[in-house]
Length: 389
Image (cartoon, rainbow, N blue to C red; front, side, top):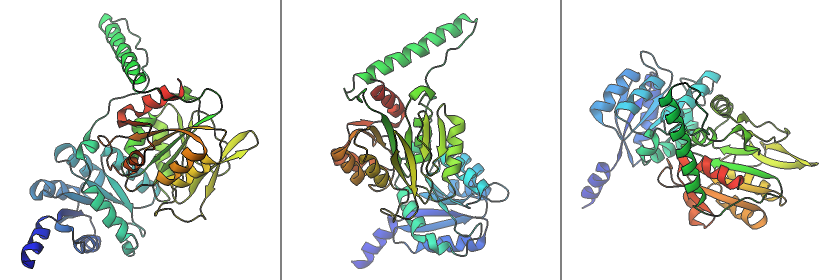
């Protein structure tokens, strides 16, 4: 009887493909994964070209992939796999500036998550992040692939198309009419609105799948939004600056990594630096960033969404619009409880339909804290509808 149970467990294991140009790293990562009762390593690859071929022949459930490899690097392989044989991929990256920039691109191309190698390309101390690797690959193996392969439309506020072509003019009217109708439909979804008296802030919390979600939401916000935006994205030190710079180049609003003591300005999104809690503090008649690298991690995270929301709750004179998006766990739930009890907020939770990992927004919804549950591609328009109502 026991043998039958073990055979069943083996058959239910998630099949892994390990890709790295270092034989040492392939062995080390394979040993980590094979030691987990839910994972079976079915193959390895030395470069991106081999990875693409073995994904087709072995049909793994997920892949761990190095970024820097010969013949075909991890980014090129990721793009090819996601276009031909999409499946969950967790990247392993160095913390160099180039490594961080490539990691952010990997998230944009469809990677579920990444793990920073603590010791460079050949990381002798990779055991330090063993539990992180295992946690992320298990989570990755259960994601909805539709959320990683969906190509969202350009949802910026419509820009006028100036042309002498009659056809182009007709197309322009259709685009504007469509946008107007969608706004009208969304306006009828609920009557949630921010009070026109008092200053308003937007707070966004996210984790696994967050970089793509942030890109989708922030590119949909106009420069004229007229309020500051505070963001906690779970990321280790060395990567949030690259994320902010990448988003800044894509968005109409200004996006930057938050700096301690700087004043919070309208039309700017501030991303919490990896390794530091982001808090907001009143300074005279204005508000500024307070970064904290001393307070302990919350549920394994620094920055933590809970910490930001708790600091927001101390400013009872302010209005908040809080958005909780894709991510593992329930960071943000306890902080939201404090903010809703002591402050003023309207809360948006991303829907299960579009969340890469339906953990953080699910916790908000199940606690009864979500005023609206919204698909990712509608969040920016919902933000604008609520704060401009």
